[in-house]
Amino acid sequence: MSDIIQTYDTLVNHLLSLTLTDITSADIAWDNSDFDPSGKTAWLDTFYIPADIGIASKDTVGAEESGLFQVSVYVPANDSTGGARQYARRQMKIMSEVLSGFATNTQASYNGTTVSILGSTVQPARKSGGWYVRDITINYYKLGE
Image 1 (cartoon, rainbow, N blue to C red):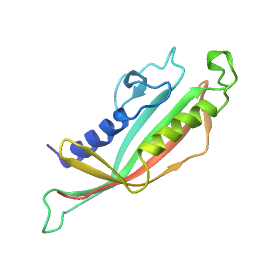
Image 2: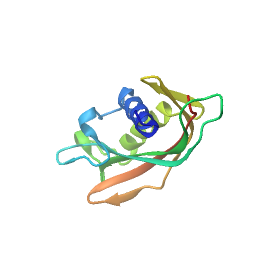
Image 3: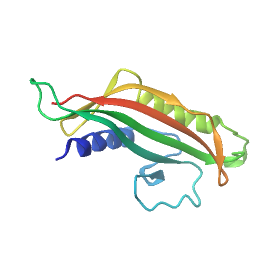
Image 4: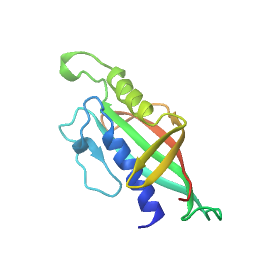
């Protein structure tokens, strides 16, 4: 299997392993998949961006890879889910759970592939089509195995 596919599968499965407030696997839009957020009270959009693929050292097999895994957290603009004004609180809770799951200097492993999390950043919020959105950019590195 391609190194890029192994890295992608590892990051996706790690995200799926997290317990996130108001988010199930049906609430995640994956790269190049049909997704309709109608009727959802929160959802995630994901983007896998391999940035640098290099040759492994003489002691490893496979390519080294670094890049970004972006998770965008969507809640309704002026969120009042459940009849209570939540504004950005629910979104911040989901963001905190994603950030904890992809904490700096941790690792994600799946099917024999280990990806190191170098750090994560959160971008300023924006409104988009009735949604309040924040992007979490996760910087990762995979050493050739």
